Length: 317
Image (cartoon, helix red, strand yellow):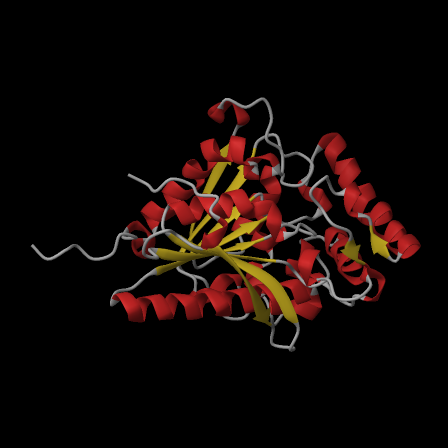
């Protein structure tokens, strides 16, 4: 039987992540009440602070995972100084911030393995940007498995109908114009859970969104794209009513980048969990999420030996 979700604050502790450029990020570990069975990193969506994933992290901790959540530079508790002075680009969030979180999680995995005397799995979970940017993070191949939730290639051509027109307008006009006007992009326009974005990050997002092929065809990233290096399980989910941020075609486009991996594509419909709508954000709310999270986690655990054997080696008879 799985451990029950806990809200005990004693099982949480703040940490700092040091990036390769020396920048410090705010992070938090969510700990299981018993032995650590596996380690997980939760990488946020664009401009979303890590606190949004608290209920999900607590649920994972209840299953025996030590879970690291963190804020990208310029977002949430990782904002230093004024937002308009923040130089962070999307590639910095990936190549520096996601990489720093992975290093911290890998060190924790090695420490727990030394303590327990057997291998533990490392699961990388990415929501939206946190999943689509992972292949830019140096060393991400040290994870055993990747779980992407509404992670996609945000080329406006991956939308259809009216939503395609909205995506075109967003990347060609709204995102760059408002970023220049305010010196940042207002988070409220991305949804109630989003924070305002640093201008350089917003402008890079706009440039990638206008490109045929999104960031995967950006010549400045040609030597940095490492998606094809990963050989473990990659499970990518789209939500059937997430028309605004995570269209199925965009998730398929991302899946095609993992050419050496065992990729599985999944679709979740609200009706499958008795919900009227889920969209891009609702699946991380506790009241709905606890019906969804087991559906997300079971297939990736089943496909990953180090996660499937989370309970460790059998006891001697």
